[in-house]
Length: 414
Ligand SMILES: *Cc1c(COP(=O)(O)O)cnc(C)c1O
Image: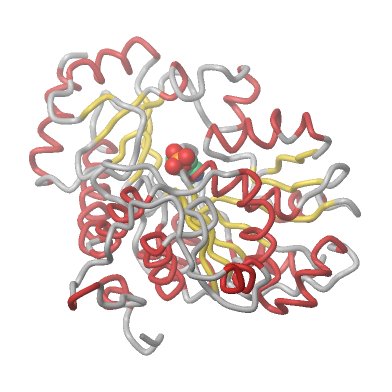
């Protein structure tokens, strides 16, 4: 189904194929392996002369169904599903870098991504330079001869900063390196990252795409926009020769994803695909509720500050408004007096759940400094914009009046 259709329609229909007996859902193929009548047929598949499923770590029809749908939704050329968002980031990045290479990354990152770059990949000889993604001069200055990719989050979690993706894409292009965008928080509903210059789009489908917090998953979308035939990427040469424009997806699927083994489970892929159908409807409500809650918190005497890119006085409002068409997502952070008051408000909330997740239908809160970012030094916390008085809210799709009443009552406890 082509790109003439609008996003909301593509989320429902795009890339979908009828299942057996005309089923309007893909079958959940709960199988590890796929049999062929002859040795020749299986050889043809292994050699790439024929297409077919072999083993679920490498591919599976239920996974393929969501891969096709995400490819259409993101207007990419290919998608690889993974076990989690972290698996997607690890797989995509490891397909590109080798020991001695450098990553230029936003300093405003999901905690797992930060430790992947800093510690895990650091231990394998891949160095990451972390820079403020809203400082384009610092970003350009961070590129060295060894840099092989730029990595940013479309909306920083939990810093809530919004980098100018088109401007960053221009810097990446100028240096002949790809731009990888973790678009988990913005989702395709706010913007298709490809249209803002992303070469590879990454999602934790566990969050807004799944939407109801019932299964972990990740996705790597190859936008097909980067030319991998370059002296910076000699390791892509065999893939470029054989697969041309699909060199990145081929190296991911045939080498890194196969070797790392972080494949999606068929049932999780099915559930994440169920969520994709209602993404636009949920995001519309998430955005509306987050703006209402941010506005309420902003006007509350006990609240020190509110960080939501949809507030007109946010330093990120102009960029976010332009690149996300007046939509700002469901995440926000706010500051109280100190850690004790943050704890007191979290403990007093009745509707909002205190847990480590975002993108659920339910409103969620967390105190990042003592939980998801607890292992970081004060310096790293500062880099990530995580202070002791900060509370992160993933605004749900409940009635906004009930959400606001919950926060109002909790703030009254201070
Ligand atoms: C949650 C999250 C991830 C990691 O995804 P998992 O599915 O939990 O592995 C990566 N990036 C962002 C922005 C996230 O919010």
